[in-house]
Amino acid sequence: FCTPCLQECLKPKKPVCGVCRSTLSSGSRALDLEKQIETTETTCNGCNKKMYLSKMRSHAASCSKYQNYIMEGVRAVTKEPLHNTRSFPNRFTFPCPYCSEKNFDQEGLVEHCKALHSMDAKQVVCPICASMPWGDPNYRSANFMEHLQRRHRFSYDTFVDYDADEDDMMAQVLMRSLRDK
Image 1 (spheres, rainbow, N blue to C red):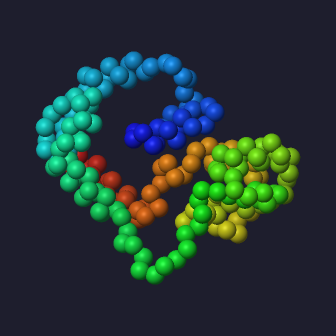
Image 2: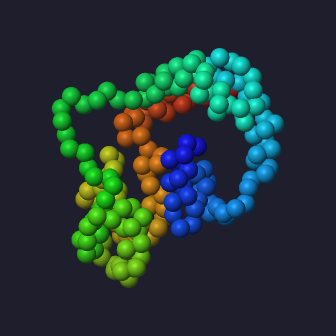
């Protein structure tokens, strides 16, 4: 993981694993994982040099063939910028759908709704989902509180590239999985 992604996972009051979303306990090191990284051999996808996983990050930073390999993948899934100007929805702050209080970040909206609206049964539109490219601004959640707790445990911005075409990205991943060992 890169540092910004790890920071997003560690941001909540109860930090979570970036892969499985399970709760992390502070101060405990994953010694078995460290040993596995130190002893597992891999091959650079750029220059085909063999090395241990523990050395891969520093190698990737200096291997121009690996960097070209990565950029090839990025170009394959990135959409061309739109020629016409359109307004992008605000994905950083949200209004409360119950009381219309404004400027909550995703975590703040969840906390606010838990504290003040946990018993409100009114069907409302999730402002977080409505701001997403795939979101329906008219869809009213039957149980908004449950939706918040299940769907918005993490920030989409950590894991989603809004400029990547999903179908192209899946095709690229499948192609690379067949090509890479």
